[in-house]
Length: 193
Image (cartoon, rainbow, N blue to C red; front, top):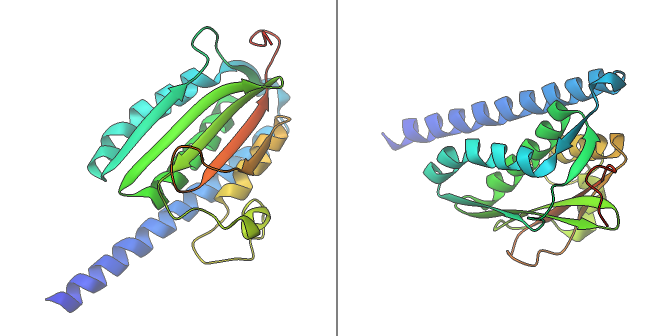
């Protein structure tokens, strides 16, 4: 029956959206709790963190018709930052989930490089992109634009700033959709600039 099928699809979509919102609120709660605890800072290799996240996500993404690609442009050295591993994993997983959500089916490319003493990670997708006119609102805690844009990017911005970094919408050079650039200060161990 087409009506029942549509109702089931609507219920499944609503359940997914609610689950996504709960995940966002949990990440925000973790971020707030961990900010007060500087002892959680450690030297981490962003390339390793990203490789682990992408490897774990690949089977699910493939079933959804997504192709994930990780371009690590610093093969001779790693990108070390001083941060909280749980929050950095949450930041990157959130950005990957966001890219996948708007790219499906399609491609998501995550690239890394060094730039002016920072580790740079760019998440690019094949989705519709983000209108540059609402980019600032997308990274605020109180987004004032289209439904579907929730707390995720604002939480990512808070986490990046907590570690002395930044997050911004940039022009995608590889895919047609959104490109979100995260910059985090390199620690001396990994900074050979």
